[in-house]
Image (cartoon, rainbow, N blue to C red; front, side, top):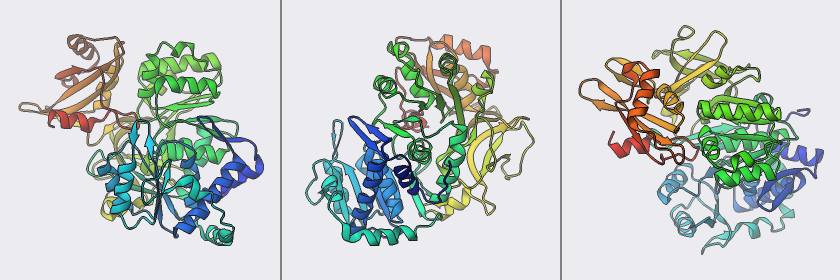
Length: 525
């Protein structure tokens, strides 16, 4: 990166000047150049000013990955506001909680998302929350709302001077991005990231994920997820690449887009890759354009790594993974291109400078190398706070800037980080600590298993025991006796699940991880 800026939106205008005709966004039949991208950001910023958005306000978008995602995100930042994405898959109750918590001044929303008419939800939110001064709808606007395109495209030359003044007031410490966590424990928390924390993370990421201005990056995660908002979405803007957007994950269509759009960076969670491997079209897909295969959110099962390694060797591509979280604004550890197969399989890479990582005990004292404890990280990427939740912020972020993740893991002599499980997922059986991820890894090594989830359930004698849920490859039906035997060959007795259920489908979160809260609720844990 030859030029360095301290505000997120400035990179849009930099690339608009440096390469105005280069593609910035591709979505369905839309192809947006960087000059068009910058013009759209300006138009949205002027519209937000006219709608009454002030410095420090919030702008919310109910949509998936599409051009308006980037337009509204960068425009909100340019006028000093904080942007947030909301999934159109959310129920009205879920939307209501987020809108109530963040109190946005402007709400932009899709009218339709595939077979769902969001009109009733939009009308309800508009009526219930007086904080919303303007509701803009992508598509036909319900009563009391305006069409997004019509409103944004109105001439506003008279507001240009005000926009310039507002842009000059922006500071690197301003709140830029609000992301609500999935709420695995309690209500979702709004994670606040600033211009500074976003830029600090992506400046390191683009080097370790081999991102540059020539990349064509697949962007098919929900926009309320850190993978879309920062790791793939904003990082692509920062590097000056092209974002190939899809507004949902559909395994076969994703493969078609990778081939048709000559995608160079193919990043997914392991569950997504696994779903694609089972398709007959997978082996016919042309992956010759892909330069980087990346995964996150979970360690890759052996099958995923086997297939991606084969593709990387065939087309001279690189593999990349890491460990991170919404609070960390993305990855804070990264693999190395020369890592061995076993290192890729078992670890999430190493923590690069200027980031810091350590493993601590329950008193937050650093533990010896190789010992399992809670992962703590520190660096300029760190969230500012949980929105409106000072006590919860103080519980995880100490005065020295260390964030206590709730993830358990260990670090070896080379600095490689091994992720065990969430602290809240670990369970005790007969006095022994059991980490579900270790059992899930073993189950997923079985040739007929696509993915697995293990939770601890109460037991009269052993306090807790493992209950495993297994999703097989399409067309396969492994017997539970066979899976128990497989576990027995690879695990000490107390780690073997006492019950294994085989199901054709497991509930998934929007980020592709198994929804363990849904499984726990189902069996009454």
